Image (tube, rainbow, N blue to C red; front, top):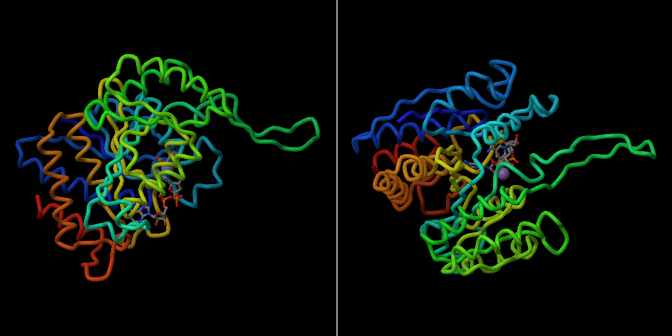
Length: 354
Ligand code: NAD
Ligand code: IPM
Ligand code: MN
């Protein structure tokens, strides 16, 4: 099992190192991983003048799965856009055709107090956000900054989805719903946007193949509100790239911290890239305080979705739960009466629990 490890920038290398430790430890299940590291994002730009160096893409293409930390940093924010770290991430998603991004928001009951919502609102929370990842405003053409007829600059982006793009991610959503609570809510803004109007039509058409799934539709503004009012009404949320980006950061806070949310980005063959949903967190980088659990849980998703090792995936998730119930907490999920530990110590606690 070949894994390309792309630590990236900021806290990326710190959290990735802990996930790699867990991967090494889980080899006791009889699994054998070949791991190779390469730079991406700002690290790619520094090493090769490109946020997605050719050698990195080659390694990712040759691997069965990719483990990614995070990209981005203040020092890169003034570079021309194609050279910015975020473009490296967007390009690798596009190159590997990773159109389905799964972002599970699950509350570990011991963390109910760490959530910014009342414990009774979040207790038992288990949502799967299925975010389309290779279309929408992120990739639509044309885009740019131009001078208009009044001599004023204007910025423009194109929100765009083709039927086939919606159809394939809708299938992913329905298939996941079939394995869960058989309930899916498609989130868009069909009252205003044509992109969303088409999205809804295609989802309704695909729904005919999944009569057992109870399908609903919701406008994104209401969905953002419902997520903090009564999040447990949701099972699977299916949505586009930009709405999914925003809603998943919001959902992460229901679970206590953005440092808890893993993700899997899949193509049609379940080749996958696995990364926490958070960014490079430059404000806390290099201090050994970042929460590595989102990245460790991403490794569990890798074992589940790419390598079909459900038991090992469950074992990692149980080890995370065990570390939490033993009281280990990084600063972002710390509450009084628990044990505050650093990134490395949290990784070690998970490995020990394994
Ligand atoms: P961010 O997710 O990096 O950080 C947001 C806040 O959450 C910060 O206060 C940070 O300290 C905290 N945080 C994030 N991860 C944490 C963790 N594991 N443990 C504890 N606290 C954590 O988002 P941002 O500040 O908007 O962006 C910073 C940089 O990251 C930017 O360059 C952005 O483009 C990039 N970014 C990259 C990714 C990615 O690589 N997938 C995702 C989001 C943002
Ligand atoms: C994420 C990030 C990325 C996105 C950025 C860094 C390109 O916010 O993975 O959620 O918007 O998809
Ligand atoms: Mn994001």
